[in-house]
Length: 247
Image 1 (cartoon, rainbow, N blue to C red):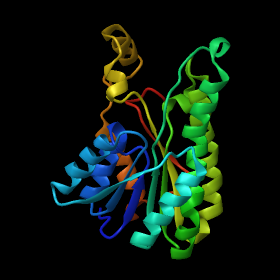
Image 2: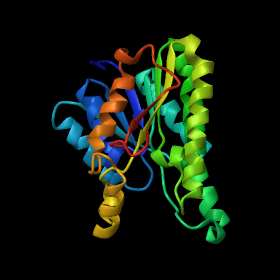
Image 3: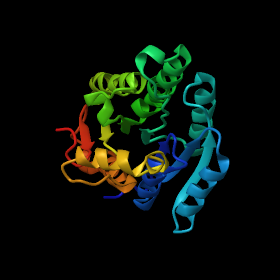
Image 4: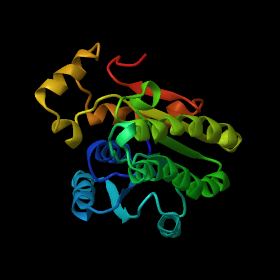
């Protein structure tokens, strides 16, 4: 696979799964725009890790939940590079809590970032992709969006919303040479899962037929496939990367 000459924007690209995706796409030849919100040091680490091995990357700050910031950022990217070929909607947050105790703010914050952010960023690139008649939009959902999870009604709702959004936009944009797909990670080793107790981690592993947590690179590999010409005839689909936890 080669992504040489392609311009890729990865939201939430400064660490974890986002960083692995940035590194994989850059390794295949893409110029990667690493989006971040509040941690420029982490974004710069990602950029440096790519440039140190001969790749091309730059960091751009914007909040995916704020339309004005997105519009300004994508105008800057398009003015500089002339095109956006790949958009990976990866940015996401959690504000867990049982439904009866969940505050309106916890609901709104998660839906605005995890779902509205996907809508805003996709809308921002769609016109440019339609003009160039080529594009790859890849949305990161979650096993939780398909299966649900106690204490994560807000997160599950947002991730389930991405599923319907992806299929709808895939139908709208297919005739213009743009594919829209999703990747649904299971439990992946990240900063968040590293903080789980050994007992909780072992319980999770017990629910996974393969018996282990996934790695960020597992998600990056699925994204790279969907971004490539190998997936030119795949749209409106989801790749489940969860060790068999959800089938």
